[in-house]
Image (cartoon, rainbow over all chains, first blue to last red; front, side, top):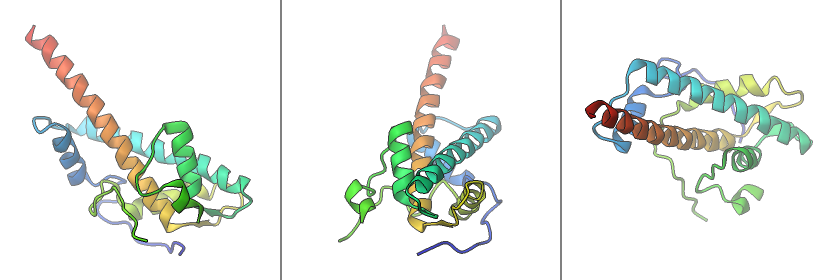
Length: 95
Length: 71
């Protein structure tokens, strides 16, 4: 199950602006996100993705694989970002 | 068996843009030629987790600023 090239959706931005505003409302219903803050969150997300993918590719290479897999990303997320995503336990990833 | 996923159907991260971005970054690493679809889904969920964490921190900062303003 590998990727095929696809056309970007929406405005080509990494974040769905509407969902981002909904996310802010979920955290605090009284809060609003201005344009500068929105842009900054976009930039931070982009930097995060750059960091995770680059490091995870090195882990895939270390496995002598030519495929970036979820287990590479999971390992980097746990070791460097202390992020665990439910539904991606070690047992599921290893199989 | 059935797998549970924490992310909503309509994600904050645009998966097609994320996929394209991941391919760009991965192409800089020699020998990496494919990206598994599960890797894209996992990173989308992780990015959403990171964003939620940031927004929660921002909310705390905003509250602190408003307290100072009232004083």
